[in-house]
Length: 158
Length: 158
Image 1 (cartoon, each protein chain N blue to C red):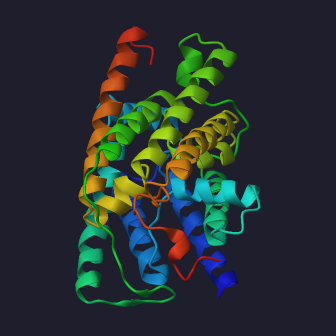
Image 2: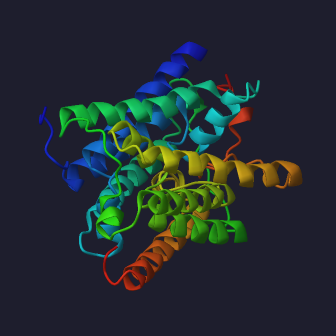
């Protein structure tokens, strides 16, 4: 519908995200993270009685909220994604394997570190947790280095 | 109480997903342009999110406010341990390779990019692989949100 700009400026999106972090603490005394929501959704799928049900709703909410913003912006377009990899000449199956492998390593690391970009990177740092600052500095630095290596290996295609 | 908390979870998830998609954080290019320092969008967004929430939470913590559903506001801070660094490095590697992280992967899928589903499935696999080890060793109760808080012990459990 193009009600939203192509990309909300970071100086609007950033503070909005910060207010959501504060808001969830003020309402529920809970941190805004994403990997925990994955774990609770996994528990719900296994019909575990320990499931924290609101985290499952929260997981679904992220999906719905993303769709709403897309509808108000460029509109939902069914596509594969990862255009940069397609443009580098990679086959769809190879791209799928790379994305799958990356996501498995990411999930494993998130569980090991106790959080991800939202849980440690924004919410944990905002709580002034030393562990979150250390985790965030580590994953940021690692991601920059790995991206540099990917760029070198692909001759600048990625 | 349970139902109301589910609604809170759904709404905060939706707000979170909305901001992520409106900022195009679910796009591989947005993440990689920042990791290659071609744009500082993600750093700026995270910096402002922390810049808003850190001081606000600090003030609210000092005022010892009562949250709406969760009792006295309790932030958590933990010591840096080896698993934060190793997990952070693994997470950063996967973040770079898959070009997305746990919450944006959901928004990627709901924006119509079908390969977002591969990232989501990979994240579930990775989280599950590590969660099995954590559960069998029982060395930590951290649930993977960056907050190091065992959600099962909170009154909001279900």
